[in-house]
Image 1: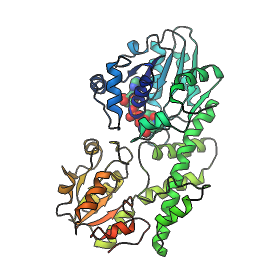
Image 2: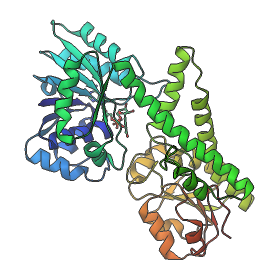
Image 3: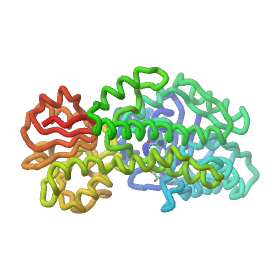
Image 4: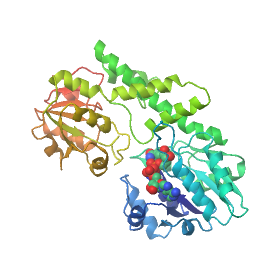
Length: 431
Ligand code: NAD
């Protein structure tokens, strides 16, 4: 199939590369000229394990193309994916301005009947709005069909998730376009779940909200464990072994972040308000998560009195390991709180520092290595469970600084072998 993909971010680029890998001819269109220039040379604008290799091989075999020109990119395409960003407005609802522009770009440049496939996470009803918008802006009479195909990949394992995902959700008005999409995806061998458009849109929000609530649930239990002397690791393990509960997303920590869970849970609450529904569980999930971003600071203040002038190594800035994505990362609110408390922050992340510089407070200094970040530090916050950070702390056998582990990277048994004073989430401190 000859396919066009609008938007080459984490979702659009991975989708494009994987579709070209299974034999489709894919043209990626993005408005960001610098990004397109880099990608055409085989340079990925994002850090995603395995992506560059697949990208390069499909550029070389002539199946993967990049352009900033919508007219050229959309010419003769019968399948057009929308994978542009849907960030958050000030009122916390979904900002659809990139979606609206993408719909207009499509309408102004297509010359034949098309199937539009929306990968972006959009509020329920948006796909029908996209279709209307395209039809309104067309200058000739063409058939436009729309499919909601929400994305479930996880940054850091996006390629694997695309090839071996649990399912592909396809929401459509009738089976025609859904069957064509099913054919496109056949080589992945991933089960397809077909439904109506509204349900497909809702599956994405409900899934993210459920996973976020699982995290807030275990974090709330962790905070209680600290008060009663229980160990949240064992509690989570004991719960997770019950198959009705399952062991995933039961890891206590400083709360979820990223470019999806925070904005999607908030957009869902807004969406529900518009139809006079109150999502109490999701509202609490969000509130608990925001509070959880403050727990390391509270522990550090209890330990040190105050943090004025203290040298603090901030280890891990991305919202999770194996990605360079800083959007919505807990490192943002946590570093802002620490600056307010007067700490001197020296930060380190294996791949996220370039993007962090643009987002985190200007007062932060950046270290070229873990060793440099930890040199003469009074305390260290571990915010992301990167292997590099875990291995360094494990093998270096430092006596200082005092460690506040926001991701429970070490079992308490292993923490005892570290030689340092160690505080974590939902477990007794190791002194
Ligand atoms: P992103 O911000 O990384 O990328 C979006 C890209 O779209 C940018 O490169 C931007 O320049 C481009 N763009 C904007 N308007 C355009 C237009 N009119 N024509 C062509 N290109 C245009 O976004 P992302 O993280 O890939 O997310 C995309 C969507 O997928 C969002 O709705 C997000 O919620 C959803 N999603 C993201 C993830 C994830 O892990 N990042 C997972 C599942 C779903």
